[in-house]
Structures are given as C-alpha cells and as structure tokens.
Length: 275
Image 1 (cartoon, helix red, strand yellow):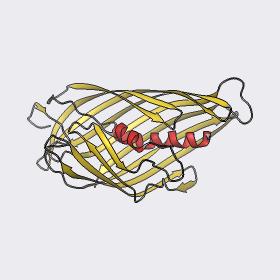
Image 2 (spheres, one colour):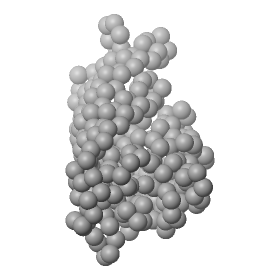
Image 3 (cartoon, rainbow, N blue to C red):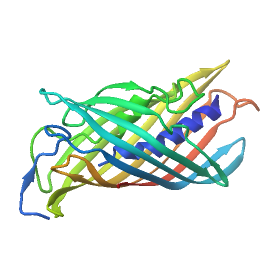
Image 4 (cartoon, rainbow, N blue to C red):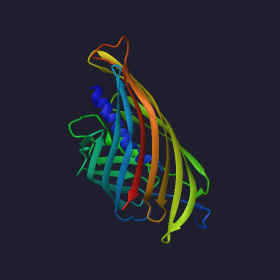
C-alpha cells in the first residue's frame, strides 16, 4: 500500500508541472477559447532526483520521463466553453537503471473547460496507471496542470493569484497557492507570444488507515515556471518549470517492521515544447 502511495505521489510530481504557466501592445487578454485552434503535438521531458528513506535506509534515484501527446480543441460553444481532446501517443520513464512505461500510451481524455482555463468536466480515463485502482484521479491532475487566466485584459507586469486543491492517493490532499505575472509580449513569425512567469507554494497533509495502522501525510513544495503562450493560437508554445520539496508518510505511535516512516525528497525540472 505504501509503495503504491509513493508511486502515485511521484507520478503526480512528474506530471504536475504542466499546470505552472516584445511587441508594442501594452496589454492583452489571454484565453483558451473564442476562436478555433489547430491540433498541437507536445513533448514533455522531466528530469530530476528523488531520495527516499524508509527503515533507516536511504536510496537515491535519478528520474527521466518523456511523454508525447496530441491536443485538439474539438468544439467551441457560444457561451465560451470549449471541449478539448488529448491523446497520449508515447511514454517512457527511467528510474535509476530501470526503464519502464507510465502505461498511458494510447489513452484518450476528453475535457471541458471555460476560456479562462477552468476545468469543468473530464470524460474517458479516470485512472492514469493500469492496475492501480483509485491511485490517481486524472481530473485532479488535469486541473492542477491548467494555468488559469484572469477574466480581464492584462497589462505588462501585472500579476494575478490562484488557489487550487486536489487529492493525493486517498491519503490526503495538496493545496497550492500560485501567483503568475505577464512578463512580456513579443512577436515570433508575426504571432504574438505572451511570456508568463509564475511561482507556487504547496502543502500536503492528511491521514489514512491501512489495515490496523493509521498513517499521516505531511509535506511541502515550492515551484517556479516560465510559459510562452500564443495569443492568437491560444496554445502553449513552450513551458519550463522547476519544483522541489519533501513529504513524509509516517505511522502514528511506535513504528513496527511492517509500518515504517517513509520520507521522500524531490527536485524535478520539466520542459514542454510544441512540435
């Protein structure tokens, strides 16, 4: 059970960074809707280190994961809602010397969101990993990955804040406080590109009873990201992020050989590029 929780939390950290996002114009309105956009293929690469301590033994693991997915806006409704289709085309992960797959290849997700980026509904896949029931809620992951824009136009240098919350493997929750800023507007091949910089602070907490033992989750994380967003295309062009933090899953009372505290530290960098 604890190993499943650890795998789930690490997987969230690998995917999570997707949600952290000069020309003469002095302000711009950033939206995901209003006009149709082309299908866009992305490659996401995450590299970093995870250190785990359990039973007095510490293990370090270098992690590298790669995913390719195709994102398409399938419908835009008059009220500003849009439906998006995401197809995961390939995936692989290397943890230490072990190579494997994240088991999401070929999976399709249909989601509904408003023009600001607020996720409203998800249909299709509700579990990310085959064989780990209730381990990951894909809606929560997609909600976390989505940068939400304000409803009003932004001036250069203007900032906005947001708060989010989502479940972690039925053992607790992660609460995030984010702040983003419109750093610059520039043109690339006659297309306006908005550069946003963002930061976040998160806390993990909760408890869950496994068999006859109650485990408590505590943790924190910090992150920063730079995102380039196509104003007219309404798609992410490039995204770079870095998150680091730690969490502990510990039994209440005196530890036993079957119930040991598990401590994890992580330091992960992610790059997402449109192809």
